[in-house]
Amino acid sequence: MNTIVLIEIGKILIPIIQIFGIYVIFFGHLSPGGGFAGGTIIGTSLILYRIIFGNKKAAKKLGFKRLMRLTCGSLIFYGVLKGYSFITGGAHIHAPQISLGSPGSILSGGYILPLNIAVGIVVAITIYFLFCLFYEGEI
Image (cartoon, rainbow, N blue to C red; front, side, top):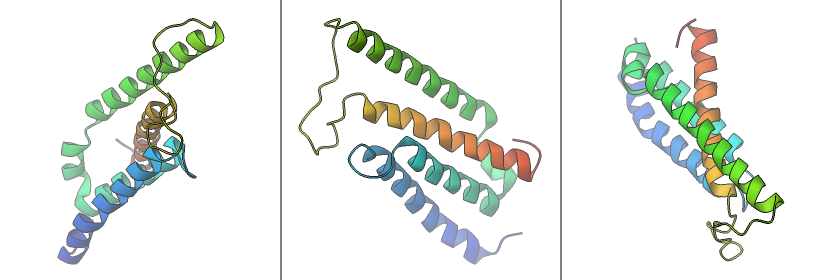
Protein backbone atom coordinates (compact mmCIF):
# COMPACT_ATOMS: atom_id res chain seq x y z
CA MET A 1 0.00 0.00 0.00
CA ASN A 2 1.41 3.37 -1.02
CA THR A 3 1.39 6.31 1.34
CA ILE A 4 -0.68 9.42 0.83
CA VAL A 5 2.52 11.44 0.28
CA LEU A 6 3.59 9.24 -2.64
CA ILE A 7 0.12 9.40 -4.18
CA GLU A 8 -0.11 13.19 -3.91
CA ILE A 9 3.41 13.69 -5.32
CA GLY A 10 2.50 11.30 -8.15
CA LYS A 11 -0.60 13.36 -8.97
CA ILE A 12 1.64 16.39 -9.44
CA LEU A 13 4.70 14.79 -11.01
CA ILE A 14 3.13 12.43 -13.58
CA PRO A 15 1.36 15.16 -15.61
CA ILE A 16 4.56 17.24 -15.62
CA ILE A 17 6.53 14.27 -16.98
CA GLN A 18 3.87 13.69 -19.65
CA ILE A 19 3.87 17.34 -20.71
CA PHE A 20 7.66 17.22 -21.04
CA GLY A 21 7.36 14.06 -23.17
CA ILE A 22 4.83 15.77 -25.43
CA TYR A 23 7.18 18.76 -25.71
CA VAL A 24 10.06 16.49 -26.75
CA ILE A 25 7.86 14.85 -29.40
CA PHE A 26 6.53 18.11 -30.81
CA PHE A 27 9.88 19.89 -30.97
CA GLY A 28 11.90 16.84 -32.06
CA HIS A 29 12.52 18.20 -35.54
CA LEU A 30 13.84 21.50 -34.16
CA SER A 31 15.95 20.29 -31.24
CA PRO A 32 17.26 17.01 -29.85
CA GLY A 33 14.45 14.58 -29.26
CA GLY A 34 11.63 13.25 -31.35
CA GLY A 35 9.16 10.43 -31.28
CA PHE A 36 11.37 7.80 -29.68
CA ALA A 37 12.76 10.02 -26.92
CA GLY A 38 9.39 11.60 -26.12
CA GLY A 39 7.66 8.22 -26.21
CA THR A 40 10.19 6.88 -23.75
CA ILE A 41 9.47 9.74 -21.37
CA ILE A 42 5.71 9.27 -21.63
CA GLY A 43 6.09 5.49 -21.23
CA THR A 44 8.05 6.10 -18.05
CA SER A 45 5.21 8.24 -16.69
CA LEU A 46 2.75 5.42 -17.44
CA ILE A 47 4.99 3.00 -15.55
CA LEU A 48 5.17 5.40 -12.62
CA TYR A 49 1.37 5.68 -12.66
CA ARG A 50 1.01 1.91 -12.46
CA ILE A 51 3.54 1.61 -9.63
CA ILE A 52 2.00 4.39 -7.54
CA PHE A 53 -1.72 3.82 -8.10
CA GLY A 54 -1.73 0.05 -8.54
CA ASN A 55 -2.91 -2.46 -11.12
CA LYS A 56 -6.65 -1.97 -10.75
CA LYS A 57 -6.68 1.79 -11.18
CA ALA A 58 -4.16 1.60 -14.02
CA ALA A 59 -6.21 -1.10 -15.76
CA LYS A 60 -9.23 1.23 -15.79
CA LYS A 61 -7.36 4.05 -17.51
CA LEU A 62 -4.75 2.04 -19.39
CA GLY A 63 -6.75 -1.00 -20.47
CA PHE A 64 -5.15 -3.53 -22.79
CA LYS A 65 -7.75 -3.19 -25.58
CA ARG A 66 -7.63 0.60 -25.52
CA LEU A 67 -3.85 0.69 -25.70
CA MET A 68 -3.73 -1.96 -28.45
CA ARG A 69 -6.21 0.03 -30.54
CA LEU A 70 -4.12 3.15 -30.06
CA THR A 71 -0.92 1.33 -30.99
CA CYS A 72 -2.42 -0.33 -34.06
CA GLY A 73 -3.99 2.95 -35.18
CA SER A 74 -0.66 4.74 -34.82
CA LEU A 75 1.19 2.04 -36.75
CA ILE A 76 -1.38 2.13 -39.56
CA PHE A 77 -1.25 5.95 -39.65
CA TYR A 78 2.55 5.85 -39.77
CA GLY A 79 2.57 3.28 -42.56
CA VAL A 80 0.02 5.14 -44.67
CA LEU A 81 1.67 8.53 -44.22
CA LYS A 82 5.19 7.21 -44.82
CA GLY A 83 4.02 5.24 -47.85
CA TYR A 84 2.26 8.32 -49.21
CA SER A 85 5.40 10.42 -48.78
CA PHE A 86 7.52 7.77 -50.53
CA ILE A 87 5.10 7.48 -53.45
CA THR A 88 4.56 11.21 -53.95
CA GLY A 89 8.17 12.21 -53.34
CA GLY A 90 9.90 9.39 -55.15
CA ALA A 91 7.64 9.30 -58.19
CA HIS A 92 7.44 13.12 -58.46
CA ILE A 93 3.65 12.96 -58.40
CA HIS A 94 2.12 16.37 -57.84
CA ALA A 95 -0.36 15.27 -55.16
CA PRO A 96 -1.37 17.34 -52.12
CA GLN A 97 1.49 17.78 -49.65
CA ILE A 98 1.76 19.11 -46.12
CA SER A 99 3.15 22.64 -46.15
CA LEU A 100 6.74 22.99 -44.98
CA GLY A 101 5.98 26.27 -43.21
CA SER A 102 8.68 28.68 -42.09
CA PRO A 103 11.97 27.31 -40.76
CA GLY A 104 12.15 27.17 -36.97
CA SER A 105 8.41 27.00 -36.35
CA ILE A 106 6.63 23.94 -34.99
CA LEU A 107 4.89 23.25 -38.30
CA SER A 108 8.07 23.45 -40.37
CA GLY A 109 8.92 19.79 -40.84
CA GLY A 110 6.30 18.57 -43.29
CA TYR A 111 5.56 14.95 -42.40
CA ILE A 112 8.06 14.80 -39.52
CA LEU A 113 5.71 16.06 -36.79
CA PRO A 114 2.82 13.62 -37.46
CA LEU A 115 5.32 10.77 -37.85
CA ASN A 116 6.99 11.74 -34.54
CA ILE A 117 3.60 11.69 -32.81
CA ALA A 118 2.83 8.21 -34.16
CA VAL A 119 6.26 6.91 -33.13
CA GLY A 120 5.89 8.48 -29.67
CA ILE A 121 2.56 6.73 -29.09
CA VAL A 122 3.91 3.35 -30.19
CA VAL A 123 7.09 3.65 -28.10
CA ALA A 124 5.25 4.82 -24.96
CA ILE A 125 2.78 1.96 -25.05
CA THR A 126 5.44 -0.62 -25.93
CA ILE A 127 7.60 0.44 -22.98
CA TYR A 128 4.58 0.29 -20.68
CA PHE A 129 3.64 -3.18 -21.96
CA LEU A 130 7.21 -4.47 -21.55
CA PHE A 131 7.30 -3.23 -17.97
CA CYS A 132 3.99 -4.91 -17.19
CA LEU A 133 5.10 -8.19 -18.73
CA PHE A 134 8.46 -8.33 -16.96
CA TYR A 135 7.35 -6.91 -13.60
CA GLU A 136 4.01 -8.63 -13.12
CA GLY A 137 3.76 -11.18 -15.92
CA GLU A 138 0.58 -9.65 -17.35
CA ILE A 139 -0.63 -6.53 -19.07
